[in-house]
Amino acid sequence: MPAPENRPVSRFRKKSTFYLLALASGIITSIYVVLDDYVNFEMITNPFVFGAFEMVVGSIVTFLVVLALHIPGKGRTRLGRKFNLGYKLDGNFQRLKLPTGKVAIYTLLAGLFATGSTILYFYLMSKNGSSVIMPFSQFVLIYLLIGDAISDREKPVIVEIQSIVMIAFGVIIASVSGIGSSGSFTDFLLNVFMIVGPFSLFSALYIFFQKKALTTKNKQGKFYDSINLRVWTMLIITIGQVVAAAPALSKGGFSEVSNSWKIALTPVIFSMLLAFLSIVFYTRALTMGKMSIVRALSSVSVVTTFPIIGIASIWLPNLFGFGGENIVLDIVLKLSGSVLILIGVIALALSETKSILLAKAKQGFAINVEELTKIKGIESVSFITGQYDLLINIKMRSIGKAFSLVEKSIAKLSWIDDVITFQIMKEYE
Amino acid sequence: MTVSAYIFFIVDLGKTQEVVNALREIPNFVNVAVVTGEYDIVARILVEDLEELFHVTTEKIHMIEGISDTQTSVIEKEVLKE
Image (tube, rainbow over all chains, first blue to last red):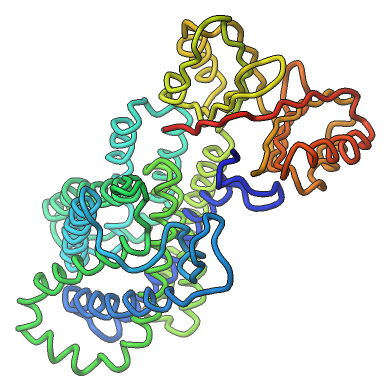
């Protein structure tokens, strides 16, 4: 019986979809970050008040968008379900529904950690510019690498670490140019500690529980979807954000919002629509690959922000203009950072190796296929007719790891008689 | 009830890319991989039934220039990773 995800060879490859989703999420992020900067600078200047306003508008926008995603389309999905617009964004989406069981706990935890990191973000924003937060917030990758190592029960391979470090340093170099703290050096160190410590840890736990919520099956054996996850985490973040903004709202924040909400509404709605798309893409990518790789790929937003700032500076040179006297240094740093990020992403994409194994089983021994599918790296096992009994698809980060898998795990199974390996050089899916 | 099968190809020297391109033109293929080892290409095909598999292999695949040998293995059961 063919797997339902099998498609004709000319459609998108799963690997391409994964990279496309993570990179698209980063690119979309760069647009709404610039929009947020604009509203925060020009209209609602208190970051807490702005955050609360944006989240309230964002919750309403998200809810309306999700309602629109219920509009039915023609025909049925490949799995026989009724087709709707939401299916286009996430194949697991059926309708707006509350999570249950373990998924509900993971969604709640994701929402709480997201609230923690968002409040800290606005606190740090009020102390420093984004030029300090952006480079140091890349340390979240370290936590994610540890998280991946724990959840996959497998150490990350050198090429993953190398690429991720390259991307992280690329992002730091590309965004470091504007560094300049207004406070003392001790304040600066304290803020960096806050970013590297609680802020990054909360962000990492937010990503971790998002992934857990999307990769845990419910009692019916079905997966939760990224659209519903966004709706409920957004609601939790909004409540947290409004509570955190309460002191600022009572000290003149309300009047700031009531004066500016009409002009701020359109850019904020647009920003939150983009944020919705970006996060849905991001969380979908999380279900397809490692957390650290998704996070590293979406860091591309740091680089894609520059051309958008360039375009925005034509209209608003005071807000978005590049630093006057250091413009050459700025460009060199941004270009160097961009090149590092690009090389890191390409190295990561090219480092995956796939192999096909053909195995013969010993006469008189029962084939225990569960022993095989539990081994890390084995994607699928097919019982086939012909000279060999099994065809095993494996995916690894290096040929050396593939060799270890064959030598130490597969060949040692009592019922395996003979194995031959084919290394895939080029593949079309 | 559809049928999936792996087809293993041995290809004439220097003809691999041409054969790959020709195989990709056949809509039944879901995966085509160029590999090292005993065979040159391993491809996965999806057909309605064995009758269609027979037609695709004899009327389309065997007509492709550059293929010197094929071996077809029908998938009886498939288990995906946990």
